[in-house]
Image (cartoon, rainbow, N blue to C red):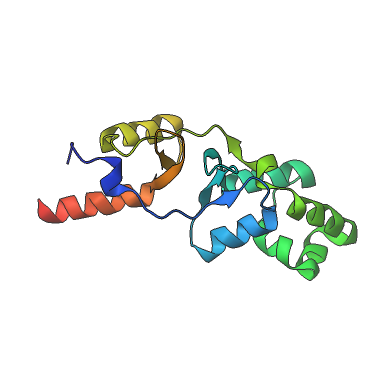
Length: 162
């Protein structure tokens, strides 16, 4: 178990978005793929950020002035947006929906290589309070991702074999 590498645990291929992906599309991607965060790639396929539901919630709270529950629904449904935030709020929510991943993402995320030991990844995630770590090659291009769910799956398999 201690010698397991990222390449054996990671999910690949990885769902990702581009720097210019609008927030409404980011939320669609998260919802469609049942994930809470995705890497953000530049034009060269290099990982330049991570955008998560937490980032979206922080951003909408900053813009709107209060936390929004279910920002995805608000960004998609103008009637719901008007009900929650009033007619003027619809304009604000539309503006939020149009911003790009570049404006909301966490920049310069922690990354690991395919040969990084699982224990190092777990330590990184625990010490930095992060839920996912992109796995990149020597050029910084995305190869996979290790999430807390991936780690739980490997622990479940290990426990079943013990």
